[in-house]
Amino acid sequence: MVQAPARSSASLLALVVAALITIPIADGLFRIPIQVSDSLEAIVIATRYHSTRQLLQDSVTFSPTTFRPMRYLQARWLLQVVDATGFTYNGVFRTVHVALMTLLVLLFLIAVRVRDWIDFVAFSVAFPVLIGIQTFVAMLMEAFPVNHYAEVGVCALAVFVLARHPPRWFVPVIACALLAFALSVIESGAMVWVTVICCAAAGMRGMSRSTIVAATVVFGAYLLLRHSLGISTPGIGGHGSGFGDHFYSPEELAQRFGAQPLGFMIYNVAGGLASLLFAEPRQGVYSLLAAWHAREIHPVVVINIVSSLATTALLVWYAATRLTTNRSTWSDADRMFVAACAVMAINATLNAAYMKDEIMGVGGLFYAIATFVAVRALIESIPRQTVPASLLIPLLVTAGSALWTFRTVGMHYQLRYDAFKTRNDWIDVLRPDKREDWPRDPEELAITQRIRTEAIDRRVASPSFLPRWADRYWVE
Amino acid sequence: MRLLQRFARVSTLLMAFPCLALAGLGSWWTAGGLSGGGLWPPDTVTLSEAVASRNNAEALRLIAHGADPNRAARVRDGLLTNGYDVIVTPVEAAVGAQRADSLRMLLANGAVVDDQELLVLRCFERTRRDSGVREILDARSSAEPECAGVRLPVDRAR
Image 1: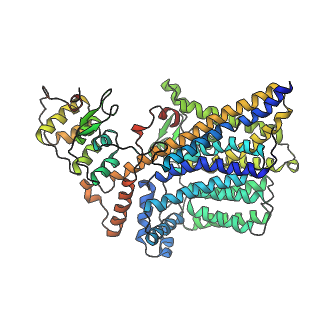
Image 2: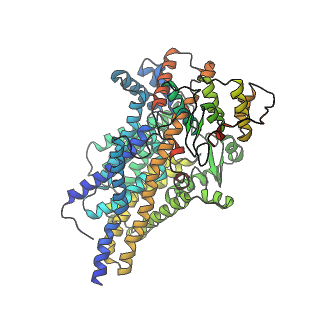
Image 3: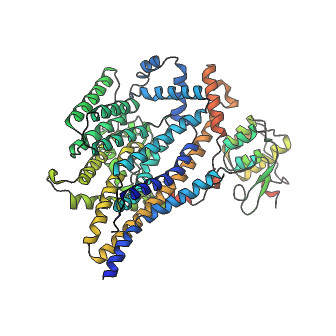
């Protein structure tokens, strides 16, 4: 391997490469207007309240199965930013989405710490995995006014970064603050606590006993609060999900699995992990099975499965060759790898009731971290390999990386498609021929009209003018 | 053998190539975006083309910016026809694209359909069947249309 005389040039190049890849994605993300589904309602609710305190009080009782007060509070704060600055609603809300994605990329860079050229090559293989994995694009396309899944991802990665550093007095404070924030945003915020526990279990030095105890107390308090508020966990039938080669509506799921849900829940948890490792199933549906029945397979399925299989094989190789049963002999990289894999595995349990790519968002981030560790070890092992192996390994990794890069390019297509769809969703809001459905409250009507006008004014590419082959290669 | 080993070392750098190529593309797209182009920029379309490409939001934007919902305009090859461009009104484009939602939107935003145009649209729908479009058109005249001799919008350019 070519050794680097200057570590800063490798880390600087990694930063530049990450920026060059991220900027056009940020542009595509910014072009998506505020979504109607899941966004408009939260924004409208936030406008109805004249005091943050009252909104906070009421928001905890908005749903019998969710505790998400920060959804409404954040929407309210962003509305206040709009009022104070005169910026557009779409501009402010979408800027937050872009900022969250940028934070995810920066935290990934900090987590993997590119210091030399071996790191840089490993980073250049792992970065397309981070961006190209289906859970990342699903996370970015989330319809909440502020992207809750991305917020949880940022908090989990921040905890992981803290775990890589020596323990400091403020680590428990920051970890608890991140956990409390994530839990008040969405239930997947529990992944922040999972990250604390996994990093500690793997022996990462930044996670001290006090951090574990403090985070567990916060998580326990959260569960108690939910219980005292009578908030239950959504069961089977609360959301549509797939089984085999078919996607079922919530009603169909309740009818089919409601009486005996255990088998379906095991299917979902196993499927959640499999979706990370093998890119199948998606939303619970095995495209390969559907393709088998239809006798037609789209290239996107093959590309996703082959690239994921190759990367997962690399992770298995690392685990088999590096991880001994004696934890005390593990290197820092080993501990990172174990923590990342543990987070991925536990993340899958959140799919118990239904499967969704977004739910595995945190797992996807850690899949890329584990890939970085494994690729780095593989590169280091090349001088010890036979000549044929040392020739073959770079070629195979390059082929796998090329597939992941292709998947990353597909993200641009998916973002354009989503922007088109979201913009057109606004046509059905405030329809001139259905004035009886318009909001009665003048303030609510005014804000809906303004966001709708802004959304329709955001010009986006139409899929009719995008490459016709793109659907088959990038959309599953 | 030594040459092969040296090649193996250098080939490790090959692993970074796809990501570097993507970074290169990213800089190209960003530079293009700053100059108004970039990767898949918004398309410039006529009102009829917006409807034909199922882009109701763009159609509404164009109407809001003064486009006449009754004026015929060019629709490029590949949207309603194969092999040639065609000049059609927005409502004709909606019928040709089998979009009841687009037709409804146009009618709610100033499109006018007289008896002659209604006959053309109903005959056009017979060649591009869509139950939603038919329901809207039949609500204006329930008698079965006499389509003999009616020239369809997509035949005008031939």
